[in-house]
Length: 433
Image (cartoon, rainbow, N blue to C red):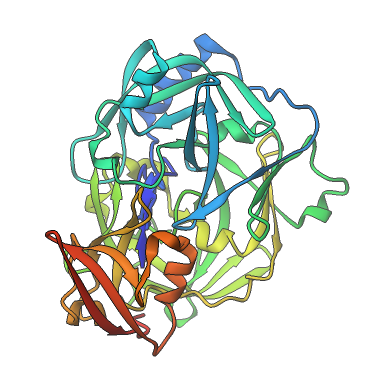
């Protein structure tokens, strides 16, 4: 399994889900989740109101913005105030206008003057992250300009120094209809939803919680138990599905699950987040049915201040990538159109590694699944994955790295750095869940 900052969803603000769901950037967990909380959202809205009533794009016609997938997160290049170009996660779980910068040095380079300081809250048991807010920034993505935007700049970015991105952007980009073409790896920013709308796919009504879209779905549990759920739609969450068992009497942890040695499945803005990995028999989204979906069942004790936002859980990137997705925030709807990946099997890292991408292209091993082939080979949390089968992972995309660790029965040579030394271990990949 790979992890990421839960950047999104306020995601959990950070459970960007290890695999970031953590999200906020994280891990799987809600990051993506990365920055979102009531206190923060209210404070940012206040600051944004001083700057502009609403973000506006300068382009009137449709525009195409390329992106790359890193840890299953959409990464776009954003120019700030015409001076600095920063890679950011496009995170629908980031429900505030503007952007979050993870490196305070960027604020110094931009010469920002701060209007106020806010508490970001977020998933995890540690102390919440704090940020300063500057107003009046200009954000540019290819041919589209968003003027008068607030910028949140973390006070302490040390624990995010190794992350592969330096920022998060969300609601601002959704001023107009946005189509995410996962196959073509482009965002199509449209002047209007195509007519007739059905050309864009099956429509889904959205509601919003602090600027984060929420869609209805049905989870089918063991024994055919159908559970209606409301899920945050979070492009910043790497995993397919994150569920909060305490939110519904029939959303308990399944009989068969796996977990890391410490239970950590990702990193939130306020620290590590824990949970279990299992499967649900079906995930029903309108007329679409996805079978045997891998899900993270979150430990409520590590949800932190993210709990009130999450509802029943998150719908993450591993599901969304199976569609071309069109978001129409103004119309409070989204459209899903299956792509070539729709029938792809849901799988978990078969070596048993819980990883997070680093800025240099390597991967930090956050933890190892109990009794996995990686655990038996002596790999452990804190190792840094640098090569697979002798190939430097920095020369590979994260998609390729993860795919190499999801081939049932294959023997793989894994090279890690530990304490300044390099260790190579051979692991046989096996389906863990």
